[in-house]
Image (cartoon, rainbow, N blue to C red):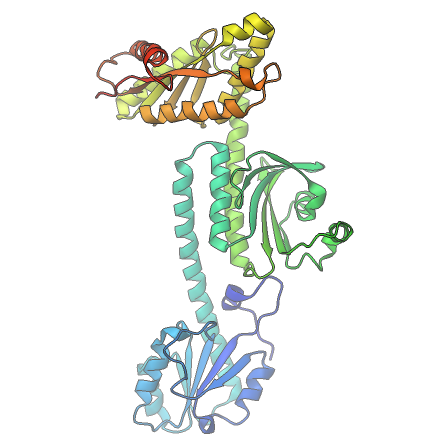
Length: 494
């Protein structure tokens, strides 16, 4: 009789590898039916034996059995105690227990079941019936593990999406997703790569093992699993990259370059946006890592589809931006919103915060030394600097944030669910990004600096939306004159 792979097998079986359930024979060998071990081995089981009490009971098993068979004469005075001990021992991780009784009849069967056995049979034992009961026990164990895995996955997903909800910028969300998947499964590599069919290069937007990578171009010839996932629009699962034909050309390159590659397995999960492939969630393990299980891939695929939702939101945001340009609500030079659009958005945000007792921050940013750039390099160079700062602002803000050009060399930001300290931190982060940015018209010594004024709502002196501009502009002037970091903050009052 062939053994059928059940859910309990999938819990431990590496992808695409055969699985043999482990059975531990315990108790008196003389009380076992003759030929029992041979029958089980021929049936596809891994069989080990142990006397009772099982040696080493004070330590947990590294790999607990999938099922226990306890053979007893049936008339032992302490049968119930032995069965209870085996059924409740943590070292066996709740594996089903079948008791085989050479003697004692129905009374001994009842004692064994009352003591906690999953099943019990009185001799003589028919192997066909025993096999059916073993399969039933393994099937029940598989259902329990499926339920446990489902609860675990649900809890992890809830935890992940709680964290995602607090980080609304797309690149932060991608980084959270790859970090959580990589950490849960102990992966050597987990990343999210943007690419479409026919592309020769991809763009890595998040990497688990190197969070500093946010926008890295890669040659897709080095990642045949990504190319295959995009081409077929199906998940690609490779257990051994050193044997799989998909990696043949890559292995030749490794050999020619005398590279020692310890990658063991690879999984590429395509991500779809509006019905077309837009990226790949990439998982890799190295030699010695735990094998990825089917439920691991299923869980990672759930996360990959969450990434797809993020991409769809970004596309909608880009479409909204294009509509704003066509409607004349976007500043043509910087790509940020116009002053009229800022005024409307601030009034909407003010009313929403007042009605629902929410908070938000208004930040006014002044680009210092822009006049020097205009005078030294010309107006066109100054415009290009403003345009690049506007692009950096658009890239760094979260989805619900709003960036507008406030004046000639000033920008304004509306940051929902942000206090004054959060507004200050945004300016500090923007400064660091500008300091690292290469402006084609400027040398390193002429990179523009920023001054800023921050006001948070609610505020005792803010009764109308216009009052926010008054407070932010006053804070900006105080920052330029009095603050060493040139960031002024209107004192928060409620």
